[in-house]
Structures are given as structure tokens and as C-alpha cells.
Image (tube, rainbow, N blue to C red):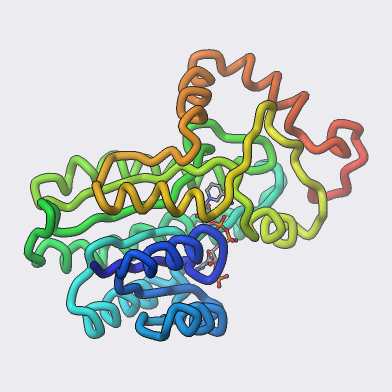
Length: 273
Ligand SMILES: NC(=O)c1ccc[n+]([C@@H]2O[C@H](COP(=O)([O-])OP(=O)(O)OC[C@H]3O[C@@H](n4cnc5c(N)ncnc54)[C@H](OP(=O)(O)O)[C@@H]3O)[C@@H](O)[C@H]2O)c1
């Protein structure tokens, strides 16, 4: 099978590429850091396609899909994984920061979908499906968290898109799967602090359990082999956020006390933090 992975240069996307390679898939590996995805391709034997693509640019999303078709002739699964956050309160996030994050996390998803879905519609079905769109959202899609409010909004947008698209594309036999990881050990947190220009960290969410990117990738592979609506790599998180929607005030208080960075609670955080 042929799988396109955006954001394959690090973290979950890279772990997914390694695991899919081991299953025998042909991969189109995309990210802005071409050196990293070329090195990954070499590590995996060199038989995959490495494409430099910034998903916030629609033309680069279209080119990624076209290069994949030129090389492999079809796309079985499109994994919209590229994304980032900035660790900053909503009221202190600039309009430009918000626009850029939506351009990558949300429009980067829809632009890849716009390019890939017409291709999938023309393909012969395999295992009952002509293709699959897999969108890497987050557990925060169902509950925004402090300092990641704008990021949470992009993840909620991805979830809404997946929910609607799944029904819209069902008659075309194109599966749609959203993925909702909890805190995963990748470069994400460092990138979020670097983008914000400070080194504050939110505290661990009460009862928080972290996962490895390899664990998340394995759960995603199950849903590529047998498409399902949603993947919650840490199953109890789905129940936790579902219950949380019934008691938002209590969750607010817990988040305020137990998640906000200590420096912010003590009033010591600098300007744009
Ligand atoms: N880590 C977590 O705790 C966690 C939890 C829930 C959901 N997620 C989601 O999982 C996905 C992957 O994140 P990760 O944790 O693996 O983080 P990561 O290690 O920082 O990897 C992010 C990937 O996205 C790529 N990327 C970022 N902006 C891009 C752009 N404009 N165009 C193309 N590629 C871009 C990066 O590649 P380049 O910089 O080379 O372009 C990199 O390959 C994200 O959508 C994130 O929201 C992460």
C-alpha cells in the first residue's frame, strides 16, 4: 500500500514511517526539513519518496500528492500529521501567530485532502476502501487547555472536519479517521516553547500518562489496516475528556490549579507569556 505522511521528519510521523516500512508499505515522506526525510529514506533502504513540502502552502500540498501519484500510481492512506503549537495564552497570541498555526494545522490538512480525495475517488477499492484520510488531531480537540488554547482550537477544527468528511465520503468508499494522542514524547514541547520564546512549561495534567511516538504509531497502523472512525492511543483519555464535557467548571478549576505554569500562578511570568 502507498501512504503519504506529512510531518515525517520527527516524532509521530517519523515513528509511523518506520513502522509502516516494516509492514512493507511504500511511503511518501514530507516535511520542510528535506535533509531529515532524505536521511530517514536512506535509513529505510532508499525505496521511498522524500518530498520537501511546507503544508501551509497549498501548491506544495498539491505537488506532494502529484509527486506521489507520479512515483507510486495511487494513494491508499493520506496521513495529515504535520502540526505544531505555541505555548502562549490566547489573549497574548498575536493575530499573525494564530493565522500561521491555522494555515499549517488546519489548511495544511484541508489542502492535502483537496488534492488527494479526487485521486482516491478514481482508484479501485482495496479491502472495501478506495482510500483513507487519517488526520492527526489530539486529545485537546475535545477540551482546550491553558497555554495551548489556539493550538487546541486547530485540533478541534481538525476533529470537526474529520467528523463531517467521514460521512460525506462514505458513499465513495473513502475512510476518514481522526487520531487523538495524549502527551507524546516527541520534539513538540520544545518546538512549542521555542516558538513562544520562553522556557515555561505547563505542569503535567493530573493523572497524566505519556506515550512514546512508537506506541502512537502502532495504534495508527491498526486503523490503517482496518479503518475506524477515531483512534485514541491512550484509551482512558477518551472517557476522561467525555466526562469533562459534563463538568466544565470543575475541569476549569483543576486546570487552573494543576496545569498552569508555576511562574504564571505566582505572577512571575514575563510580558508575552
Ligand atoms: N507530541 C504530542 O504530545 C502530541 C499530542 C497530540 C497530538 N500531537 C500532534 O501530532 C502531530 C505530530 O507532532 P509531533 O508530536 O510528532 O511533533 P514533532 O516531533 O515536533 O513533529 C512535527 C512534525 O510536523 C512537521 N511540520 C511542522 N510544520 C510543518 C509545515 N508547515 N509543513 C510541513 N511539515 C511541518 C515537522 O517537520 P519540519 O519541521 O521538518 O517541517 C515535524 O516533522 C502534530 O499534528 C501534533 O499536533 C502531538
